Image 1: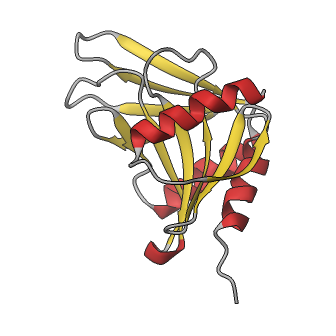
Image 2: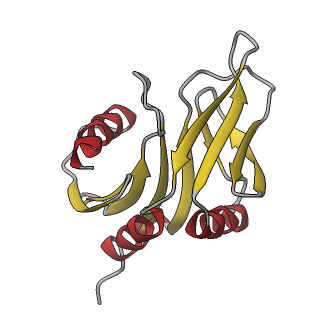
Length: 160
């Protein structure tokens, strides 16, 4: 499983500015990291069948900005404007807010519902329509996700 984390670190370096990150652990297909400069922490995974894209699913914590458990999905392709992005976690379905290649939950309540579904699910898939009009899906295994989410939350817990 450790060989899966190197591409995750590469994906995160593409997704965010190059800064030092501390590993909080690798849990099956999910990793947890802490960016000490923020601090900012996240649980992150690549799709089950990663390609050359920088696709990932992440759950973020950023105490200074009062962000707790924010879902972010980087799509494997640019999506067609004015088309929905949908997330399926087990039998739960969510419509996401989306940019050209990223998608998020609509609000904190939706973030919490998605995270609850992730904790009890075994797989999830994000589906969208690409710029050429073809539907695509990025699938994720959820084994280890709950532990990685907890590690990220603890990694950014306020110290008293």
